Length: 210
View 1: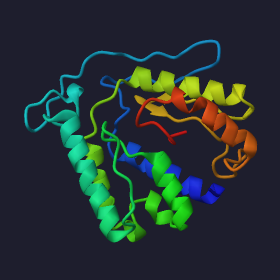
View 2 (view 1 turned 180 degrees about the vertical axis):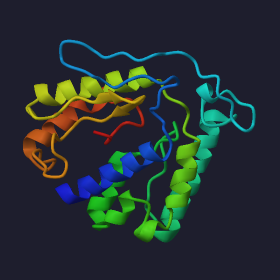
View 3 (view 1 turned 90 degrees about the horizontal axis):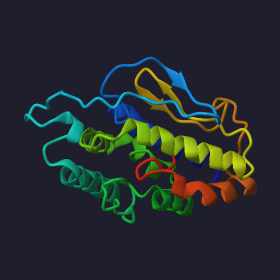
View 4 (view 1 turned 180 degrees about the horizontal axis):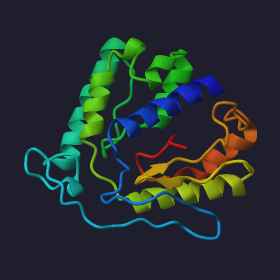
């Protein structure tokens, strides 16, 4: 997969992250950064926010939790199959898209829109609908997962791979220190080898976020 295609795919994943504050803290806190010597921590106070249906927001995006998320994701998949490519893959049982298969299909077909909601965002509304139903995540665990992944990438030869950061109640993914002027090539043999070695460090739903 070319670096340009990878960038588009990662942008699509980040769009899902931005659409709904899936990694937002349940209580506000200041920014924090990590180093290899320590792990930043965040408040784990439970949310008391209520959804319109009266469900505790700390348990997910809606009263039906993962089932509703999966069903909404399937509607997005069906839209992509109808409007973009009939071979667009099923989501995982968790409801998250299988980005490894999505990326593989995008590379095989040479269609960048496969990774970003279709041409002109034809299925973006359904992508956002699914994002709104994503079960609430444990921010601390997500952050620690990204941190472990970043450390693994550096240990496997991608020395410039940066750590994630905690900022204003959200996790900011790590990766290339200068995304606007990339210093890391996802197409290099070293990066591909490191990615394979470190893929299990990322929790479900975080693949490709950094």
